[in-house]
Image (cartoon, rainbow, N blue to C red; front, side):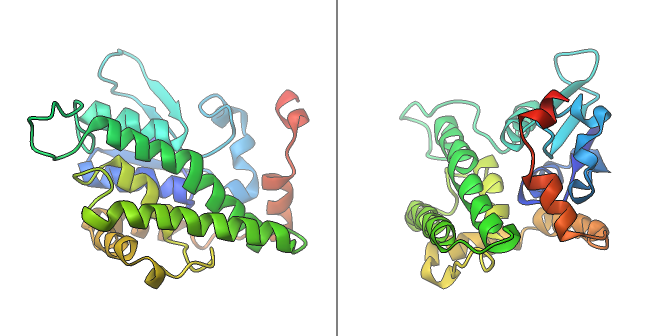
Length: 240
């Protein structure tokens, strides 16, 4: 059984999509980041960076105990390797069918973790959460988000999915495209990305994953409190 410490963010959705795709049993443990639950000592033992998602695997392949994993990209890689699904086993040898290459999947997984996620996240922050509108910051991150959309669009011009077959590279990127309108992006400007997005959106596992999120939509959200909790942390927060 996988315990998934989760909230309804793009990074949280990555893991529910994966688990629904492979049919691995899991239990959601909600961590309401708007209410500060990510700072509870019990959660910090699992996720020392006080971020969701995190998992505890009570049936790991190579260990008699339990394994905890934090960071969404690391979780996707761990679960893909555990199940043997949604990641190629080996690098192509040049003779095998072009069904996917492990290096390609990892490159695009890290592209999302290092680029699309952080840049779109800053886009969200300065457009929605910042207490004052700073034109330079908004323009900077809207443009960079658009550049990254264009990179993904170009990649998808001659292939159905990012790295051959459907993989964790696609699962990592998709939830960051879902809020495209709030990122000031128009999918009509990126036709190959739009086709890819709609394909993943229609997958039964994706539909089930986002249905799971509906259970938490009723939670009260105080914007000012959330600002203080989410965007006002410092070294002192960790050292306390």
